[in-house]
Length: 307
Length: 276
Image 1 (cartoon, one colour):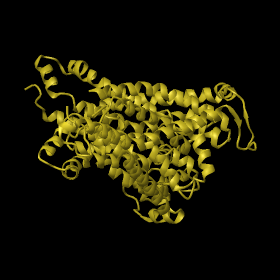
Image 2 (cartoon, helix red, strand yellow):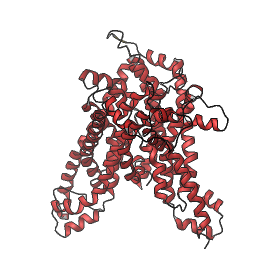
Image 3 (cartoon, chains in turn yellow, orange):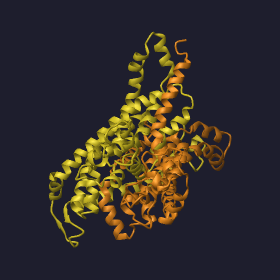
Image 4 (tube, chains in turn purple, yellow):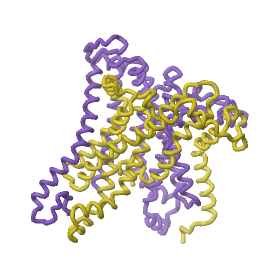
């Protein structure tokens, strides 16, 4: 075991006992700002959200605040808008996960092959991840998906098809496409990193033993990818549950409620209808949903810490 | 040898990979092309791919139409400020956890990670009201602070994984040779820590630059960074595609360059070390 670092430069083993105590004190001191800030950041807003969620509190309705118990939750959870937005959230998260992983796996396998100019291809593949969400949403909406002058409409006409009016006929699908484009690089890059760490000798040994390309893939590559795929699913889910900017700049949740997800619903109740109580109740529902996912992610990451 | 790579295979995989890469990159390329067109050409059907009248006037009008430089400056201050402050808070914490771990270090790290899992929308209401009451709405200070808190767990995590890789034996060896703590820091630790510090800085700069929940909800005009500025193009007002493209190109160009430099660290930073 290496001795822990002590800034007091305790180098002799003889003074290790006092050194450790000093070191621990110092270690706590160094940790304090980060832990303290994150603790406040976690506790204060959450406590306030819980508090507001029990009030009848609307910013437009003067500043009257009244304790109403769980009424806000009853109101929020039975609101048809909640059911619709929960459904939209699930469809959005599920579809983007499916698209990014189903396209990411072959793409990662392809990039793992001997490819001339691989680093350039990789730069192109990864680029969408660095584009800010408002830019990608507006570029897709106006330059590509516009029903008259968008590139997709032109391509459809080339093939004699009727152009799709994306944001009227299939608004949620349009949002799904945009978000998938942003997250495909992430899935691909993680899977590629995992593939590259796959032991080349193991694959060679399998081939020596007469395993074909297919069985090498099924029995060696796929099990090796199971963990990174799980990580991709969990991390993407955390971010996809709160997709906001893409909806905000393209559809504003509409038409109707067709592209309203839970994050957008809470936003509109809070900052458009100024219904603080109901939005807070919704916020807590979102926290609970995210926590279910986080529980599994934290376990996986924690297991890795031991290694 | 069974694994000898045939020329055929290289040709096919190269062609397929370049095609995929091109398709994925295309929307960005298309946007950059549109930024050099006139508004009429940007809107034209059939579209022109390369043979149009190249012009840079959109880049000039972006500044005239709306104060682009102000928003770019806001982005730089907010993203840069929040990243630097987060680093200053995180370096000591990560350092202490990596070099002086206790039984609770693992729990502490996982707890920090779990704060990142909290959906921002869950605390939108209290943050908005607190900011309103403190006069922090639409201020650079307010946005810097919230982005700093939001990214702090990732910064601590990334730094922790880098610091943990610094072999402790080297420190002992240096001490045996009679190095003082000052020399140890300057000549042994700093050179080993710099790559980790740099990539953490870079990745978090990117995350903060592109953050589009708090910036959209907590700023409107004065403190609005580029994310919000671009969002203002969502309300249609006549022909504006070329200008939107020019503004967008300017907004993403610097971060795209930084992003390409930091792509290796991206995996590590965003998976909290779960995939390396």
